[in-house]
Length: 52
Image (cartoon, rainbow, N blue to C red; front, side):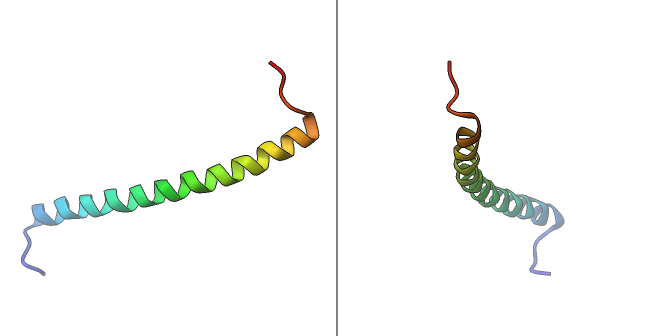
């Protein structure tokens, strides 16, 4: 391959998987923030603002 041993491939592969997971987590947080605002607005229109 590239001259890496199997343990090095596992190590660098793990780092790559962690990086991809971090990027996907950021995308999910942004997506959930926008959809959460939309859902909250719809619920307030239908049921009113929550009382404490």
